[in-house]
Length: 238
Image 1: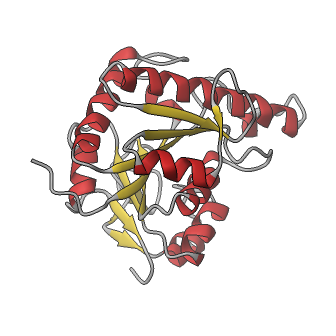
Image 2 (image 1 turned 180 degrees about the vertical axis):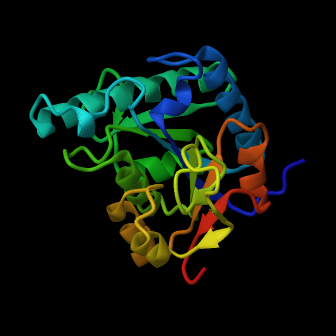
């Protein structure tokens, strides 16, 4: 039995999290695990918005051979592909999941509006928000912060490959030190690369906490929802 400490959350998934052992696309076993964990917290009554990146398909910011606006447009389409994939896996588990997009594509997704997204959440539907912010030069981290504010979420759950925020890359530096908690301002000052500066600033200005945790460790999403101290919490005055 889950005892949630949060009623409405925004889950930020990286596109790379879907890769598993693959070099591109998505690993069905990984997506199945994610969907199973989402089903568990959804069944406990948690209202869930999801923003997912597109880095497993295309990353606009690193496409230096084309105009950034065009590259980011491709990236927005990649987030939509991933959103439809997650939506389908949730639907297979009996969850009413709706894909909303910042970019109009009516045959694939509903157009995102904050009121529409909140109405779906109130009706116990999972809302998967595609298309980033709908504008170039903004990351899906910034989109996650923005959408969390728009749906009136209590917290951003930032799922990553590592188990929290470190003072340097733990995959490259075995002596990297993990933070149990850190403030938004410190994260900005130390130039930590967990989320971009715009996302951190939005969360700091509106007092939105961010829990950074390792996605592919079973049970971690549930622990976040129950308030179990895992990963790193980024919050005001940490």
